[in-house]
Image 1: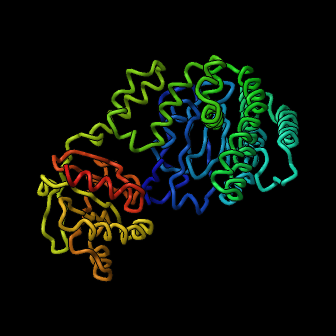
Image 2 (image 1 turned 180 degrees about the horizontal axis):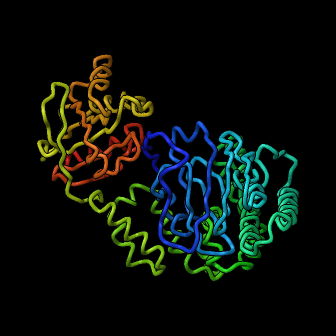
Image 3 (image 1 turned 90 degrees about the horizontal axis):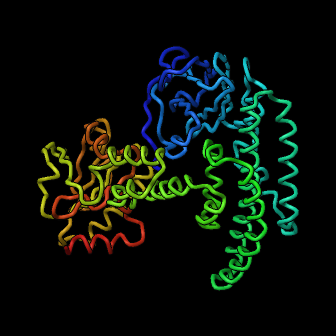
Length: 455
């Protein structure tokens, strides 16, 4: 998924509280002051299927004090958004103080209610997503030996887990996480060995080796996967993001018929949506509009309809939303001024190093396509024009690239510019061809531009 532009507002230990809907009683979580929180907003997401499908969905509020609404008296799980990776288990009426360690998250300290549960929950095995690190692999470590080590660790953690909490919810959820983390570690073994061999062997030899290796791995691995999946109800499995990510990996290796044989009927809809979310080309195509008729899961259907509402104006074939920009002389231009010729647009800013790294390739393409029926437009979204103008004076730019600037937040909002660099392709009929167009360095970009120019 894309990175997000974060608010740069200072954080206070009192103030805005995160609220979704009204439940029985709140739990209060306070993060001690930390330099990380001065750069990024701290967000806590409830671990539900909804947030698993749309991990970028953020709760409102930027405070370091959270009022978390907890409906289940046995407790619920929250997760620190994105970069934090911290797990939290809370019950109604809890008060928890978190001394967050941004460098070694498993060394984060907890005080107050449920401190033992949360310390156990945030061991390195949970935050890293694996039970053993690939760095521990050796050429002599067989899959069976690795498997025995993984499940020995699982059994050990299950014993300590029972000592950490008497909550039935905590114990049941932790069992699911541990079992699926074990499966994730086994897949990690497969991926690591395959990666090493790919670097050692010629492509043709690797394909022969890999076909044999994958067959042998799946034969043993799927026995464990089937055994573990049969232990749990599908709704329980789908309740946790880490677990469903592992299940997605299994389906990717073994095919969707694996979950069907397990009786997991909801996951197929979810898996199809996750694949769509991971491919901007498909996500911003008419395929998104066709998806509601193909799914039966009410949770997935709700998310798809939200996506359609949010992205409808940027789908392939949608009419272009017009905006005004200013060139280096202060003259006003509109996108509609160039209706009748395709537009390849680079959205960037002077503070974005990846944007500046791609700029030479963008300008080289512009030179190659000079005189052809396609216009190259570079749009800076710097807050002020001064740094943009200063930057352009110091750089060589292609004469046929129209350099423009806008400080209009509405442009970023309407075009969902949540991360840059971002490239947009518009056809001669003033319709969206690609809201997330290939970058100038991607394979096939010249072919695509030739195609659009010649239509």
